[in-house]
Length: 577
Image (cartoon, rainbow, N blue to C red; front, side, top):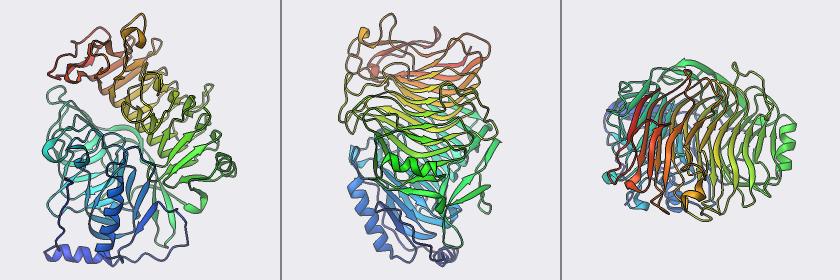
């Protein structure tokens, strides 16, 4: 049932010349680096059959392993691989070249055969820093949340839907070049940032573009495109590569302002700087939080190899410009109710590719950026979060009051999914308890690709001035047992709440959906709640009742028609006020 292809030799002299050139790339032998047993390294001297067999073995294990403990990073050294990399749960496909064209793979595929053609649970997988050279003109990347595509050159069409066009609920693309057409088909919503596309086929509910060359014109709600010409401030995610001397480096892209298109071109490199892997502590499962803190105190960056890490104490990131990054969905679990990680109010900390998974004893927070007393300006070198995900329940009972608290000013949030589980183990109104996904207290915080779902109070609470959000996707909690159990004195909580004292805030492309399957008579008063002041403006808003299971009475404040009825038709507000 999976999307597979029979790989045939290429024809045409140009294809053979290019393939031979890639295969002939010489990567000097690097110094021994132990990335652990769950980083699988491929090089172009391996036979196609051997590479394909290993990929198939891992996919067979991970295809439906939604809440399992295995984690993998598939690291391809420069070369051309005539294989199909099917990508399952907790699997990252990563090119080890400095440029996406250094690693070419014929097919990188996500489909939904494991779930009957339904892609709405294709979470926790990624691809980055590769070129995809599809032999049949197209690539299928039918993903849901927490499944980013970064620094990818697709030499053909990109299909975002599963075979037979089943349901899909994604998704995120950044710093990528798609030569031909992006084809969402059944994708409910999608966010694309700082990329270039040949064309874009369609939209369902909410398609948002910032800094995307070739994006369709702004036209919300018909079609459902929200297009911003340039991204105001961005920094791409750090990535691992092997340099010309055969040494592992982590490349840190430069900050950009008013950007559009990729940071790289087919013949040009991304601006930034390299940090030798020797300046990182390479963590493997079994290390203690005390040991990790000792490395941080000694001035080391952290690289978490794939696996699950239990933290007996809070990780304390105090040094400016520290990099904390993971591979293959490295997962941090706080034990005994501790906060998993706290970051000081300093410049330029970069946290990337980490999954924070709440433990069974309630934590007040999972990740805190800056103490509550933070006041410094970091406009020239902000802290950034990229592909940072939070989970409350699903794998086991988990509890946390708030998943992410942002107190520092000027923080860049670039692709976050905060998820209180609606299925899996340890799921129930009084089991996986979690009040709020994201709280923003800092000033001038910018969020791109904010996905927050199923929390029991406000999903997002924005208390700082000068905030900007580009794309927000939400489902309200499925499981309020009664109206009173959810909230007394009002019908539920808005998904996105801007504090009544905020005087400046702007957001584009926001959607909130309800599916109150425990009690379909539940109502939410509104999807979005903001102060009525001139400096607070929201654009391209939608609310949806999925199958008519529950009702959202207004879109924003007291404006907008109810989202209700089995037709699953969005209620929209184009601008507020």
